[in-house]
Image (cartoon, rainbow, N blue to C red; front, side, top):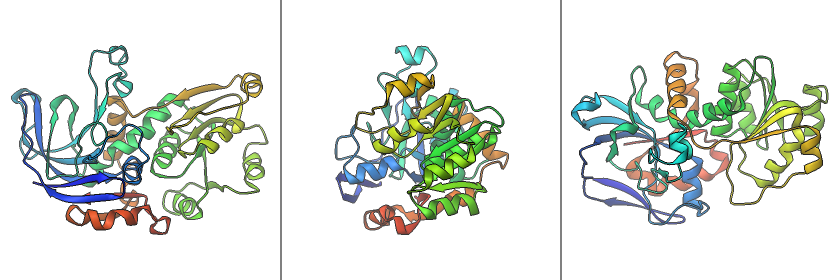
Length: 336
């Protein structure tokens, strides 16, 4: 089968590999769509701390069932999506119904080979039917579920003032679900084009571009009180540290980004505000279910989010272009 392999940072190759062998508890899937994630861009650039090369990337994907265990309820040809966080089911996190932060987690495309291939075999307990969704929509469930999980962690209440720092795909996902929960959402980003997309295509009226006047502009939106809830989705340590200063007294701060760095903050300010600090990692089954319901109900702008398309066979030549800010990529889908 055709497979795209990241041999080393900056180098992809199209290879022929054997079909995967399906274990008794696994579902063989014909891959049809693969979303390109920021994690994949970091892998390509050599900035992913949990990975060994060579690696087949791809953890956001949808496909069609080729063969499945009889007791899985999955029929041949059915469209499915995959929760790519292969949790052990037995550690302290899994026992608390938090498989997203499993002690022994293996993420497809990071710790194990992923879906940039024609076929993949995955344990049945991580495969879900994509009823009511297109293959495109099903391939975008994962990154939206990360946003839904972060919002569930922050628990915005109707009318609360929410700041999302970082208007990339994950930040957009956070903003969409915070808005569905009734929050008043403001987006902060360095790139004017991303903020324009959020205003014009997604309907977010309150956006602020990072710059000399951004603090004044943000203060004007909340009477100088700060935001009830702040999410960081920048992946930038300096931005993450700065975000503490945007949190109102009694507010919450959710770090969605993960960076290979230490994050520091002023302890007097942190205590004075009685800030609640939360981490958000991956997504849990209930987050995927929420995204599935919202998408099937037409509550998410999936067509606008799918900004670019690539062919699997052309990926070694075309992938580097996704890193160019001028390309305006929101979510690229690889067609298999």
